[in-house]
Image (cartoon, rainbow, N blue to C red):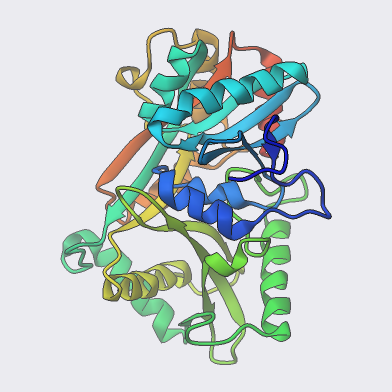
Length: 351
């Protein structure tokens, strides 16, 4: 990336009046990202850090007064990742902040550990290869029954921009689904942020949106899909919302319709992203992992349903028979502190 000032690092979105070049960031991710959730680096409130002469970036958000929460590793060529990481770390130190890096894959986790970070498994991500995928057979009988039930109830699926154009009326109906969904979760529940996508925002044009409609064209629910780069390229099942009274099988019907279209396009993978607090195993931990962080994560796995419904999310993803499960990690610059954990939870609206 270029910068008018070649002597100092660059913040791509340093002010609301100077929005980032979304296409340029997207192209950088396409060149270097191998994380299935990398596209979330384009979320509206996420900032981007780079240095002159390095084709790459680091995505992050400030958390409280003392931390920068970084997302998804260093998106750069392998030969440049160490330099970019250390420059970002130095910038954080100048601001009297410490770095917490979230959603790191194994190779990222090992790199951060080599730089002195304390690294712990945080959960796992799930994906399904679309080559040869079929929903026939006894393994998917319940799934087929739910989809059939939804279709009998009049549920149809449309991809916005392909089967139906966006309109002010449709946008209003989608917004109503968002509001109803959040209200149905209870007055104390807030939407998770940072590690989940968004329906609108600056990168909306790069996502795909599939909606479920009834016979009167009422929006029953929707799912957004974001591009996945790298070795297992495809689409990420990202944000999903539905009305509480939508027919059973509504969301499954959306996914089946999306999978049919993706397969026609010869897409390789459907990714379901990270589910925190799942897939935890001792063999996934790196040497030097924090016992404190491990106990917190496992405690949340066992009793943290009010923070994140991990068991429900895992069950939803497993019905699609994922054949790729990857551990994901969180890295703390130096020792793990309760303040760092709290900053992470606050940023994701989990506390």
